[in-house]
Amino acid sequence: MRLLLSVPLSVCEAHGAVKRLLYSDLYNTFFTCDPKGSHLGSGGGTSWLLERCYQSERNDSMKTEDDDDFEGWLLREQRIIIHSGGQSRRLPSYGPCGKLLLPVPVFRWSRGQTCDQTLLDLQMPLYEEVMRRAPSHLRTLVSCGDVLILLNQPLPPAPEDADVVCYAVREEVDRLRNHGVFFLSHEAPDELDMMLQKPSIREIHEYTATRRCVMDIGLWLLSDRAVRVLRTRSMAGNRTKCSVFADGFREYDLYGEFGLALGKQPLRHDPLVQQLRVKIVTLPEARFFHYGTTEDMIFSTVAIQNTERSSEKFLRAAMSRHPAAVFQNARVHTTLAEDQRSIWVENSEVSAGWSLQHHSVITGVPRNTWTLHVPAYVCIDVVPVRGEGGGDKKGWVARPYGFNDPFVGTLQEKARNFLGCH
Image (tube, rainbow, N blue to C red):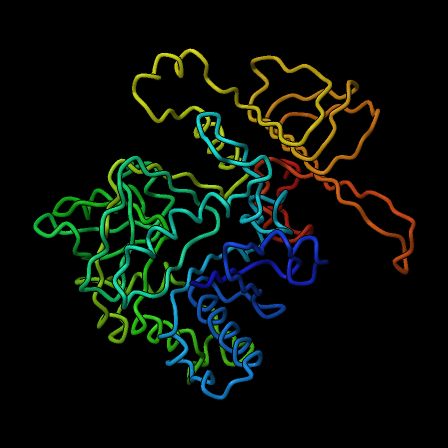
């Protein structure tokens, strides 16, 4: 089984110490990024990642019998693909390394976890279990790098008669509007009628009048046939109204384009994609945690810490809720009041002269004796830099930003939003 990772350009260009975090004795890992200056999306990025891995293995192979074409290469083994190559504008503290390497505190109710664990470490057990139980023709798993799924029950089996298997959870309507949603027939609860991406509440109510709905968790199994169709749609071909990048690949979204053409009554017309057989597997009692934004990161971490596995511990859990402040590999010398919530301090020192309010993320701050007031909704990320010419002279650069800054537009635009200010 191979692990294929889509990572930011900064990781591909980084020194060995960063890259070693992505390698493991447990996984045969390959990682790359989108072509420089491009954004291929989750669909084009999946095809590009497979192509780059295929070409890398061909170049490394010294045996002519291993020199398969792409179709033959797909047949060789299972592959887990995780996407974490975006700009992470809504979670800038971990944008340079990708959300896969986001450090996640040990769950206080867990056993066997490590203090240096990452989101990738916590994702892999479920993905491996999915692949162990997948039918032989479903060889490729594709998932988002900013989600974590915790199961309370055994994993249901994947259907045999499908080219695409999508996993889902049941969620409240208010949360559905921020994610992909599958609309299913009442008569056949694993049959997809159509998929919508971030539907409005009005659309959800309209389509659920005659159907049930579940939320996409971004975990899909693809047959070799589905991979071929996805690859075809990820190539520019004769299309002229799209940006074409390296080797003819174009921007194409797995969830927002490919997914919308799946099902019995898809809202996006694509005869090639519509030929694929698709099934939905709803995970009963599963819990979905999103790490897409700064707020999500803190909310999900605190929610996990407040989760208990066994019902007999409910009373203790209710009496000892985890505070909405997270400290990892940090020295914090200032005291926090109970109302100072939504604070994340990682790989940093907050000395006694600091004053924190609430809704702040502090990362990378070196040892210090500063006197510093950090207003509410202000975050600080500090990165080490070398002097010109790569000499021994070192320094630090502070990068302040707002807790909810969207990082959209230019500084000249009137609608810009930086440090929470227009």
